[in-house]
Image (cartoon, rainbow, N blue to C red):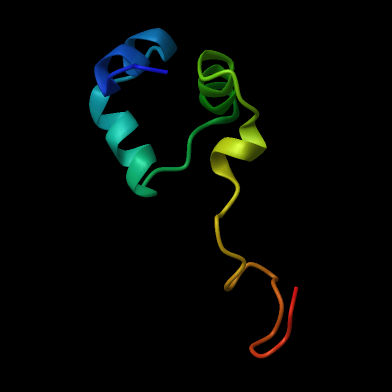
Length: 66
């Protein structure tokens, strides 16, 4: 969307460091922040925060297909 971390932070009312922490996976946002991010990024909360892998999150056992 051609937004800098600072632009996104300003739009949702947090610091740029919070955006950095979110991107690195080191911070779990509040529901309100997650909704604000989804709104600004024209996405869904699920699309933004769903793990990209199922390892260790109730996925298939090793050797099984999910």
